[in-house]
Amino acid sequence: MQPCHSCQTVIDEYLLNKRLEPLRELTADDFNVCADCATIVADACVKCGGAVYVPRSGSVTPDYCPACRSDVIDRTGHDPGWTRGHESA
Image 1 (spheres, rainbow, N blue to C red):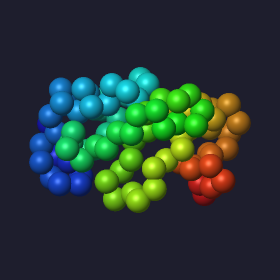
Image 2: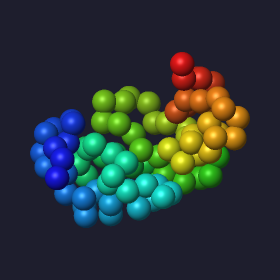
Image 3: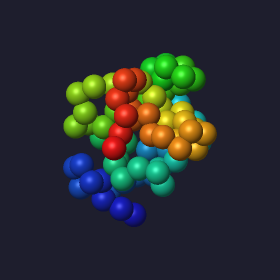
């Protein structure tokens, strides 16, 4: 059991997996945050219409879900970043 990198509480994988259900193919293993620190916004991805994960420290809701961002990287070799019009370095 790992501590949340945000609040240091022990991550309850069952609760986090339930919170992550709207995100395609992701589980608690893909995150280092607890369910209380994982903010999920439904229907926000501009590509698939699915949910996006918003880091608690982030003030901007991402345009791409993690799965679509990963798909673009795999397909093009370029990282589109989390928001349209911004490419990650």
